[in-house]
Image (cartoon, rainbow, N blue to C red):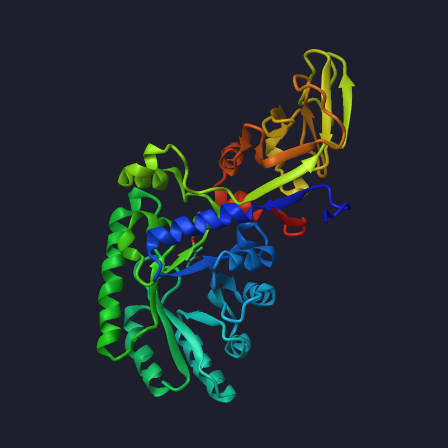
Length: 390
Ligand SMILES: *Cc1c(COP(=O)(O)O)cnc(C)c1O
């Protein structure tokens, strides 16, 4: 049932998600754990909707940034054997919650490791932790001079610290410009994990790979991958897509993207109007009609994430045709030129991102218009919009 009250909505395609996950799982290997990264409200797709959908597509492992996202994911999950992992922010006083809910979390500070051991002991259940090793990103991660103390703490509290993972994160695996830095990180990770092994500390999973390193550096796949952007149907950037199709000519031969966009963003024509030649449209004087024009108003604006910088630049799809934004983007609505589109009626579907007929508005085209990355456009789709699985 559609939410009749909402001016616009988001659709999530189950078949596209299934296709992306199958493609990626096939590529990384069936025995590799596929952790679905759902930080940033599942890259704008909506955690509440995306988690059960991904579970239907066989996902049982999710990665989030923070404890509030972990709690959301736990509530949205419909499978007992689903696991949630926090890669970033969790306050020490929330660690007890994580232990009780079997949520694992990254350790990049001794302070957090100590707190985890203490809380686990108090509760009488081990904390599931991933040691995030600093290999060269220099953002978060245990430094090598802290490894000794880390290993000692783990040995002293072996009953209460379960080492789910040894992991790291790469500083820009999507771009060849970072090649040397990534190679150094790969080497250091190997050296460091050997050291932990020598100390008798073995992890359940060794994981380092995001979408870009999974696709560009297959040696980083190990026994778990943390896939964000690619599962939603986007290549991390064009360079990664180009490298990939060059490496796998059979994919290139089909001239068909193996990844499909999961998200669409839609609204409808609210009203239409005829405007004579020589008139300004909307606030101010940014758009002057050059002939008798037909204008449609769409109930979407910058409050919904359709940026003001798309004024006179943005494009939406109506009746399978491209309708350019005419005039300033308002807070709650925009005006588009439909003069050359025949028979547009109030109530007709408007596509902001997604397909209509033969036309597609990609997130990439949307990002280029706004000089943004895919990631940034996606997360700005408001969490308050209703989402429908199609
Ligand atoms: C965001 C993130 C990922 C996933 O990145 P994608 O490029 O979206 O695949 C993996 N690991 C960490 C630590 C992250 O923060």
